[in-house]
Length: 171
Image (tube, rainbow, N blue to C red; front, side):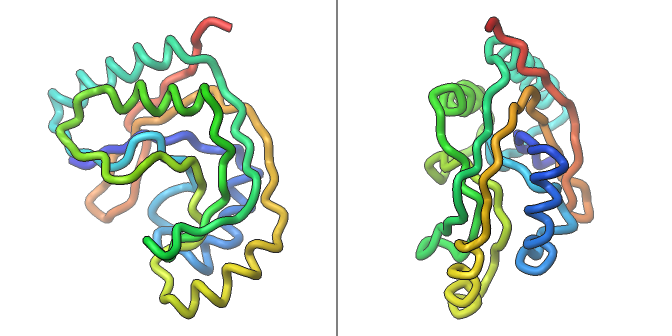
């Protein structure tokens, strides 16, 4: 089964992201707007229980962090994805590093760029047409994230929460 680890922003940020995703993101109906902390990996039932225990231990050592979106950006020319950029912090980098220290039997293929995708799988001309428009929108939000989520993929391609972990590290 496929799994991933994410942080969900508030409903306010999700609604704002979805106002663009429903037009520009074919994955709109498959997953809620999110920031990926650990990309897709495969695990069986026994492995995921061990991984969930390890995630829980990591969550206990991390305190809640501030997620600050700063602007609209793009991964072009690598991919025509457009996203809300999330300001990287030491806490966020350390959480990502710790979560990726777990053995997942996968290959981390991209460097960590904290973001919330709002458009993807666009043609080059679509991308070049809408990016300047989206860059003009205000995408500045700041909020505390106090939990992370282990998701799994259902047969229809949608994602749902397997387990939620509170970030409860010492202040």
